[in-house]
Image (cartoon, rainbow, N blue to C red):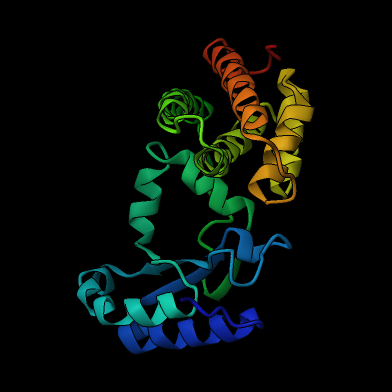
Length: 248
């Protein structure tokens, strides 16, 4: 069982020392991103995510990381992302959502701020939003069938899918040139307002994910059906999206 230090700075310090032992001067940057870089971090529940940027020489020595993985997992640290600056620059058209989400909540622990200056082409971002939303919508439908209507499975489906869609929602707000809130709840509600979705429903789904609201099996199933309909509506809006215009 993972044991996340109550003081995150302790985890940061230990991880940084590990990267220095592994790669020395080949470390360009160590960046914390995700919930651990925000007020939404929950000890022993939230993951601690790091981006480690290395030189080309460093990335060619990535095998060294293998013996440290178990140690990091015991501290609650997810498997870090290892990249070079060249890889990041060449991947902004392929994975704009991922880099945009990193940029939305991060803290530089060591070295360069490799995320600050990143720029995203709107069409690249819109295309990935469309692709990811249609894929996640399909998974949501299939997952709903696979739950067999069981309450525990429905809760898991809600929790997993809300995380995936929140990442897409941040990108959609960015495309519409709206301020992107720092919290998941803020992102969900802002997206609802911007695209005419059911704010009440998404608030309930988020509280189910956080185990703050208890619903019956029938209520859960009904909410997931409404959830699917809302995502279908948003998917159609993304298909029609034209930059500079608001589509509802």
